[in-house]
Length: 365
Image 1 (spheres, rainbow, N blue to C red):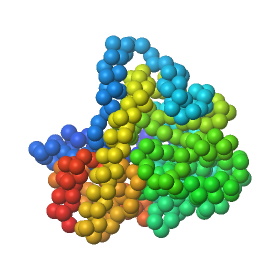
Image 2: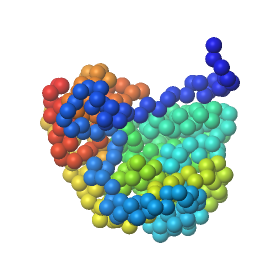
Image 3: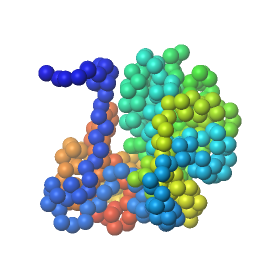
């Protein structure tokens, strides 16, 4: 017999986000003595910006102080980089926290939010956590967001529409033309959330920087993160840029001191390290092309990616394959859900790490 209060049914039905195990625990469980290659979380394999590391080391003596609750200096740095007033910027404990803020701020019982079926799992969880009604729209055959269908799914009860561009876990993207067509179809009452966590990796002429949509007066909030190309995943810093009214609303539901002092300091330094950003992008593009070419040579199905990961599809049970890869010292991310039950997401690592993955895959296939 359970003790204490019973949570609401919609909370009891929430799926639990399952993180990967620590590398050392995998090594212990499987008795692996070789170096383990982690290609599961889309991290920057080159590491953290040297400027960010230096800034963090200098700040260690001040850890007894609370962080700046409003992130004044980081918001000023982002404002200078993106060309928006600091008052239009909000910080989050990763961009995921801003997704949760949006759900808390705009969704009540039964309010609707639209998102793509094959996109970031946290959209659906954030919506359900507020007892909102998530409208899942099937992806296209090539695993992109069907923005026309998403626009048609909007009703007078729709408050939010989430777009991952590029999308996780598929690695696909929607073009400027498709984004423009979406905005021409949806009502102004819908706030479009464009999650561009992988923005800095993209090298496509028709890929839209949705900061331009905000500049053009569209009802949009654009999310970015320092967890990916900037190599600050362990410090959890993301940001959103939107109209001042939207930012004011989000600040009403934001927890105080939601970004750490070290995170803020590291992010400021990382923004200034354009050399590291360029190197990380160019290295990823080279290795992404090489890994995808290697998969094609092996007749392994995959979804062409523009990010720092690739979605691989196999005929075998992906959970079984995941365990077998672990035994060979390679950790990937198994997927699930509609159309993804035989897929695994593989981050692009260094050349050595990617070769380890391909060798392990060869051994299993």
